[in-house]
Image 1: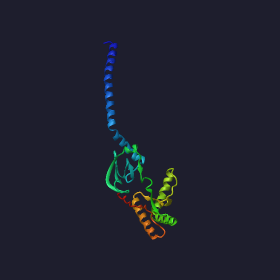
Image 2: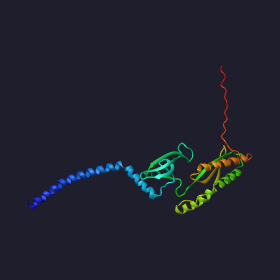
Image 3: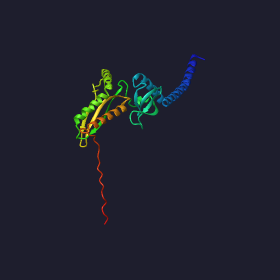
Image 4: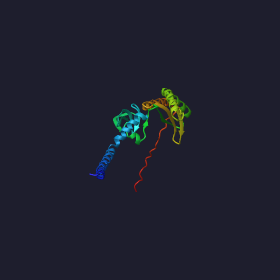
Length: 242
């Protein structure tokens, strides 16, 4: 066979095998796309695991809200984060007994709320309604004294943590000490007590505040009066039959 014949034979083989390889490449591409689509949630969850480890989203022991689920992080796996849920049918930030596993992919889809993280304290508020005839100046001072004494340990530690946070992030120098504000309308005077509290002691702290404030009001029954909604029910006689 002449040199030209060899060249033509080689070209023919290349054309034949190129066609077959093209079909194989196309088939592999389609199969790869199908596998990637089927495993996209797994892939994103694995990426989420790496983001959690290196992105400071949360760690074991933090109290978070993921995908509408609130709870304490008890385990961080490659695909899922396990939470001991709080709330739901239980009032307050208390465990309800459910263990919830949330896909790590949620950190790319929804906001991640971290209730502890770098600042393990929360601001909380309660409201106290008093009648207009109450001594509002006395009430404000008593509520401020009660709150200050109750949360003074939280306040001191919070100031240290907050100073560190303001050095790292651009946030205002918010008031850490307890604060009592007043508003009123045609019904009653409303006092709002704002204070910092450990994120795991919100409910017990509220209970202590309400208890001490109620005891104090009872000691000043001549000057402080708890307000309540009052409804007058009037009985209407049916018209006499003619």
